[in-house]
Amino acid sequence: MERKFKSKIGAALAITLIVVLGSIVILAITSETSWPGVFILLGMISFIIHLFLTTYYIVKSEHLQIKSGFLINITVDINTIRKIIETNSILSAPAMSLDRLEIIYNKYDSVLISPKEKAEFIKKMLDINPNIEVNHKK
Image 1 (cartoon, rainbow, N blue to C red):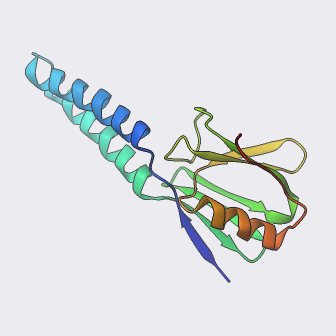
Image 2: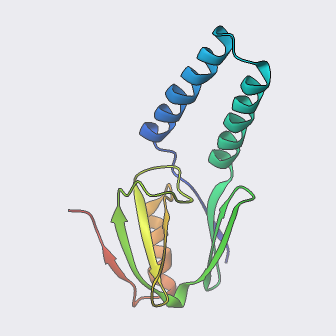
């Protein structure tokens, strides 16, 4: 059975982006900056909003599909997942919150995600692969 988990949207990440990008747009509009620059900034903001709205994780049979806009589409065999670690890593990832899970799979691969229902997500992973080691934050 397929289950879709939406990405949690972290207030800190969203507010930081709004303040930084909003300030740049206001400065660009009020200064004597060229209008093409303002339109480029608005395009960037639209793209970021698109990523916030289209980042999710699908558990289907024995596979985890990680989607973020049209840029990221990763499929992980759940039976190859060795460890799930709760983290607040700031590394770039298909995660819209800093409250993240690091999925370690295969021998050296990993990906950071931020499912809104983290406990349910971990339970679903363990139902499929009970050998996954889960490390919770202290």
